[in-house]
Length: 308
Image (cartoon, rainbow, N blue to C red; front, side, top):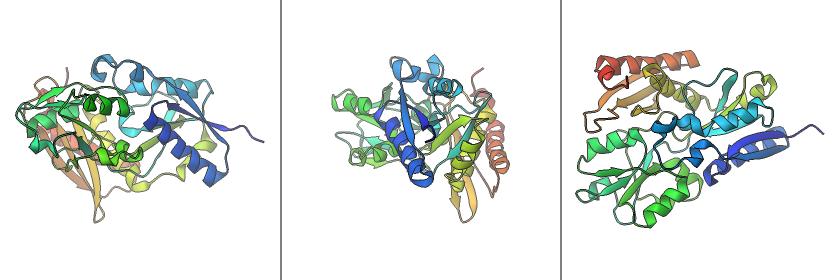
């Protein structure tokens, strides 16, 4: 009997759901024995500071990559929006799976949507992308940092610390918590993060056979959309401290990308927005579409918004 395939995963309830989902697919489709290696990352441990202040989203994946590098695991399952735009040498994204709902969710015990919040209401999020877009909608709101896993964030809301919080709809739906969603933000109003709602599978570059198997799990429309979205961030510097939104949707054979950039320091500064479209059939063409969106943002003045 061959040795089992080992999936490295964070130990939050959502991360385990995601890893178990991939585990089930690999067992059913290929008849493989698959085990999970649960790990706690620095991103899970540091909860009193914003990610942009302590090293960015890579804090959620570094320990998992170390397990891959050392041979303790064969693949890692990530929320794609948490994966840095440039992976370390020797690692690749082998697969991006079909996207769940990519939108942001408004969650509140008392109010049905962001427009119903009273003047000066307190909204919880630690996402700079969400902060600048909330300020564009409602500059009167008080935005307070909110870190922790999904259950921790919901508990903090229920304890009365916030009038509302903003979360990814995908995570709530995957954990059977869709009833907590009071409303979802239209992507025209709150553009999602690059890769939001999609799962990415990371492996070592030299894992040729495994990469071939995982290739059959790729959802091509999501794969191309994600490459386009991630290319916007990469072309602008790819920093976690950059309040950037990028979301691409297929419409009548065209991939339509909306992107927006805010100022991380002056969060009430007007958003820069752009929309581009194309018909990419390859990763390179998808990346080129994203790069064109980044170029349009630069033409609109992004240089004055980006960290120096």
